[in-house]
Image (cartoon, rainbow, N blue to C red; front, side, top):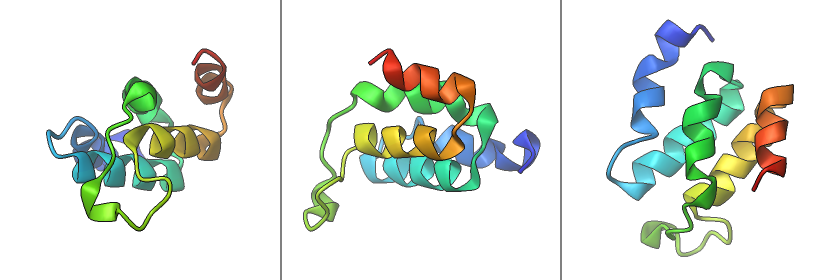
Length: 84
């Protein structure tokens, strides 16, 4: 996906609502948007649980960011995971 097309989704990574942040991070990882790596990595330390996802064991933006960076799989993305 080209960055220009994914830009609205990338902006959602910084949304004040944790559910929106987590969802955007997950979708960007699924789509393997390399242009979002830096923005996703910011959330590696965000452990705020998503109350609406009480049934989900991995409901934090941090866990979503880890999965997204693993899915993107580039050298840059994987290097950010080892810096945690």
